[in-house]
Image 1 (cartoon, rainbow, N blue to C red):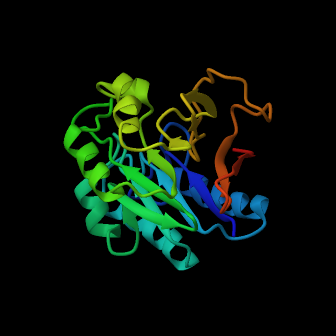
Image 2: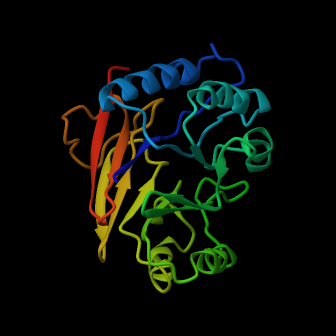
Amino acid sequence: MAVSILQLSDPHLLANPLGWYRGVQPFVALKNGLESALVQIGRPPNLLLLTGDLCQDESWAGYALLRNLFVPLGIPIALLAGNHDHPQLLRACLGQVAHVAPALIPIGAWQLLLLDSHWPGEVDGWISKAQLHWAKKVLNNQYADLLVAVHHPPEAQREGSLFLDRLATFAKPKIVLMGHIHQHWRDTHAKTTLLGCPSSFLQFKPTQICPLGLPHQCGARFVELEADGTWQETLLRWPN
């Protein structure tokens, strides 16, 4: 039986739900984007995944906005801290109602590994050897198809060029979902597909052609995972 994940990323929320940042009202944009994404996919996903930079001002009130928007939907939630986040506040506010990285989540016949790349005080990310050791332990030679989610792409991580190679010594992810870059992005590493997600807030200058021809629109990604290990993804866009 297929299961699905709706990935939203980089909302950059503020404590004030009507506050403005860089000419955008982040909470209004996230709320409208969530509604648009759910309409486009036509059914509730099995999991909502938010891949980091959740709260620009790193405030309790900002994380509470996220909780109050998503929890009433009754859909399981997975959260990553980005460089614009306060991991302790994030976990304190949402840890009892959502999966917060690092975590391993069964989803259908698959496993979703959430990795925490937050590096205090830095824009770039870092996944320590200790966290990879934890990941190896919790995976424990499981043979379910594996999906990984992390905020920072490898090129935005300390020792990021080694991250996927180190991960490959004990896990063979089919997909890595990422945030941070505020744009559609797709690449491969060995047999792993790497997918960057647009932001619900504001897009950066694209480095690849948008398949929909809408690189400046806000967006999300919808991933469908089949029990036989096959999968497909759909890029979603909506007017800003």
